[in-house]
Length: 526
Ligand code: CU1
Image 1 (cartoon, helix red, strand yellow):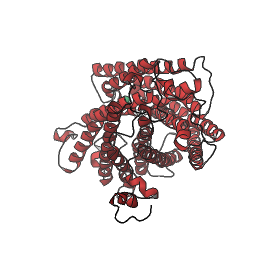
Image 2 (cartoon, rainbow, N blue to C red; image 1 turned 90 degrees about the vertical axis):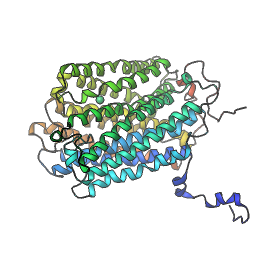
Image 3 (cartoon, rainbow, N blue to C red; image 1 turned 60 degrees about the vertical axis):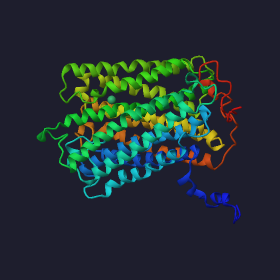
Image 4 (tube, helix red, strand yellow; image 1 turned 180 degrees about the horizontal axis):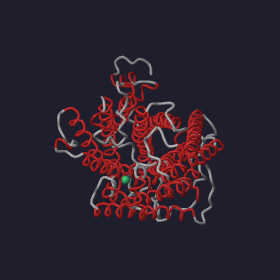
């Protein structure tokens, strides 16, 4: 725009930041969605790099690459970066892009707060990753920050606590935005029980976040005052109780697990009907199963602490409550399979990731049931079996859904088709190397190899070497994903309005009769 002295209303345009600067001030849900997704991608590679250092150290027994302190710091920050930096922001990116489009809203309800929610994330990431550089190195207590180790640690623990606070604030604001958008800004005709499944899963996830992020904030604040203000919340010598931290932490931590998987269930519930060319089977049961999982997630936290000496009645309660979650989860898996049953299926990359999700996440679900059995867990607690279990849930669960969802919606987001052949190569390399990395860890755990230890007894060598080779293959394969995404953004075959033969309309994931329009174009309100 040319200089326009005397036209005050043009000033805004004259001073609007251009180029990347525009992203600092944007209130557009699509821009903010892209910011979250790129942030997630960067954190995925940062956390993945740490994982590769861990796997390099574990390639043989003995200490070769990093000392035990740095090893502990790597396991701690790898987890925090992947959970709070890669998985959660990835799903928030999908929420920003898709929820307004799916419910027919013009944008998120609080567009400026949306900008702030995102821009809180990079400082938190800098605090987390930068804590390696301060004297004493990053926090080495594990991502659970258990006292007394986390009370004794250096200033990196304070940086981690501050990072957790900032990311928690971001999550709470994001959740308020999502709930308000969904409850107040749906287009006429979009009743709650007609909402696409991804919207439902995020609505429930947002309530989980608002319920548990303040609990985590309380726990780490008590940790902070124990560290610096002479309180003894978690200090037995002062009348406190370190076990109490575990109870508070896992009251947050278990719902957090579902925060990282419910939006994945939503994404998968869009991909499978599209490529099976059948409406989602059991829409209402999917909604109720999601809500049941969310409610049950609040009463199972004790399954993380079967070894701390709870009464047998407590252990048994947490065991049975945990096993109960298999019921609604089973409903979902049944519904996905029933959706595919006799469908006219094709296997483009998003569908490969969705079918991979259903198969491999279910393995993680079953190993979770194994862990839930109190007497079994007492023997496998703190072993590699647990590491294998939660990587099946988080990688072939959460990450598979993020990648499948990215391939699924990239044509809509960019206007171009991605390279299908490379996408399929990416899926198969990922799936082969993922299983090579994590399946042997079940055997290591059952044989008694402890987690979070840089050295191990020689009989564990072979399975560790297989796992480490798999990890490097897995890490390198993800560069292909980055390449396919960049290539798709920069150009390629123009995507039609409905890239997947018209089968991806929202009517495929809502109950019949479908809404009278599918919001492919903004609905009119007169
Ligand atoms: Cu749990």
